[in-house]
Image 1 (cartoon, rainbow, N blue to C red):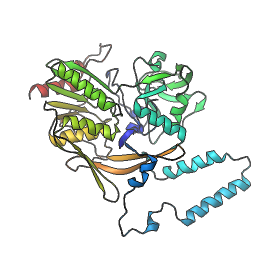
Image 2 (tube, one colour; image 1 turned 120 degrees about the horizontal axis):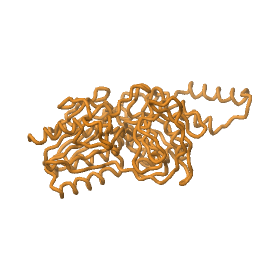
Image 3 (cartoon, rainbow, N blue to C red; image 1 turned 30 degrees about the horizontal axis):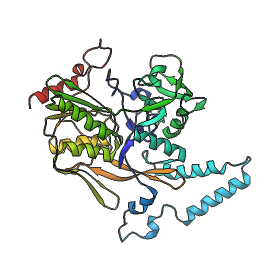
Image 4 (cartoon, rainbow, N blue to C red; image 1 turned 60 degrees about the vertical axis):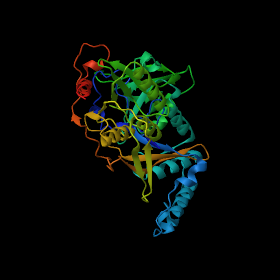
Length: 433
């Protein structure tokens, strides 16, 4: 299950002026959302998500058995009257519309409209092309420009949440916080992120023209950005004074557990005695990934559980092996979905101290179901609960220590965790344990 894999509408920004990225966050983690990860990375999901991908052959086993007292007719999305009306509308268009009809485009519109009619910003229909692009993003390897994108679920505004260092986007001059106004010559104001991503990506070595809105600039910022193969790191780490390991996780992709384990192994080899896990601005990702990582950290027991509309429950557990070291976890209002599963489990077990500001509050899980023609449907299929049974949707997780972010040294050219007041607080807490 992915958790919002990326669901880039990840942060559900309320508008151009409502974004509050942390000042001078590290090149790696600054503004990371996603994320659908939506990095032209492709993700076209609404930034904060938890996902579960299902193969077509497994689909029959996915559907839960409805309660016996629910009539078969009640389980149908459309009754015969709806199907009849759809047929009538199709006949009217066929007979009266003044130009030739693109039947394939009409059909795709019907499919997308069905899912859109749920009124759920986290449920989407993907064309075959969009799904291929989205699936690519979860592997952490793709052909693109090297940015993380978020789309506001209400306004459809697409914001550059992070520009990866050493990528074509950075070389071209893109910056965190830029707003995407146009891709090539296309008006993207009403496009879903998944579709926009398909236009940004392309053949390796080719270039895509972008028009950006940038704070402080009176006119549009325009640039041509080369497309190259991009390998996305989701974990970055370093040792701090006092044998404290500092590990930043930008999202929970399929490759994240392996990167996480490599980081832990190396820091333990360097004498790590305590650890800070930075989940600020982490929009979520794949459910299996965060559960694997929690299994490495927590003692035997429940990590998280989900419940569908029929009351069916699925438990995710950790085994006896665990990390027995003091730990602090940094969260903020952009920590969502899988990040909240991580933080919620650590808090419920009393296995670490949460520091920062209240998390986003996304307590639902999406299932991605591929269809036979290569398209797919992402639909919200369950709620998830922390080990103690807390449902955090639209509530969030409160930190143990409430502390607004402040960077303490304006002269730094690059981010230094020792000048981050939340990191400093974490160090103070860990040194007292």
